[in-house]
Image 1 (cartoon, rainbow, N blue to C red):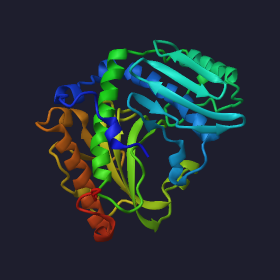
Image 2: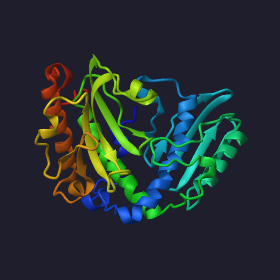
Image 3: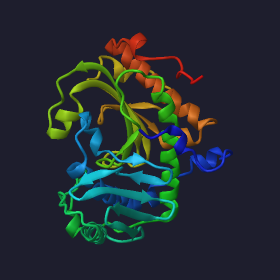
Image 4: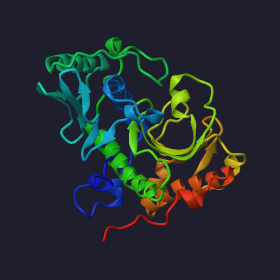
Amino acid sequence: MQDQNQLLLPGAVATHAERWPPLPFSRWSDTRDTLHLWTQIVGKLKVELAPFQNQLWHTALQLTEGGLTTGPLPFKGGVLQVDFDFSSHNLILRASGGRKFIPLYPRSVANFYDETMACLKALGVDIQINPMPQEVAEPIPFTEDTIHASYDTDLVDRWWRIVTSTAQVMWKHRALYVGKASPVHFFWGALDLAMTRHNGEPTAPPKGGYILRVAENEKNWAAGFWTGGGPVDDAVFYSYMAPKPDGFEASAIEPAGAFWSSELGEFLLPYEAVRTADDPDAALMAFLQSSYATSADLAGWDRERLEISEPPRPR
């Protein structure tokens, strides 16, 4: 589990503007879509190599000080780890056979895929992944995608600062829950930072394929940060409970600006509402806590058993 203290930005006096920078959709979307597909290529290595975990947690990428990592992945012949480093803008592949660097710059998905697979082979990692993207509209096989080829280092830096700042708040919120809960981790399927809380009860998953059948087979509350896609253009924070308790959609969720999306079946809070708040961390924490508490009360969760008022401190 990643220690939340490792996610602090360098220095202790980062301003709100530095930690929560603007992320204009009109400039960000092309880079977002390319980076999304690159993370899918790396994420699919975990599908093939990582030992299974409940709710498909083994497929998620974890946060590091400067990017995203697969963590150590066993393969025949050693251990592989692949890291996105958004400080140096490199993909770093480490294995028993050495180390390879793949620069991150405006290049097509097909080019990035070819170099990644060639580097894996050179490191002695014999692996094949499903070359079809997931959870995207009109998917193009990685091997054929020459359309998505954008990478703006300034915008990636901004996005990464937002992800890091969000993770700090989410880890603090997670610390108050003693029931089963996921790490704060990164799902490459939708390019979102996410966490879930479970109350320990099974439930019938919604209709759908393997992912829903495995990921949503327990009653849970989930929240995260999503940079948009499909019906949502701009970056948003989201929250939902599965199954949805009666009346949740009519609830008053803090802060001002949060709203129910009937299309997605989730509460959404625009990133801009957090970024421009007097205290962005407090605004995000209010969203997480109010959406969780409201849905947990409506669903009859045993909150006294599942929550603590503050984390215990070592003596």
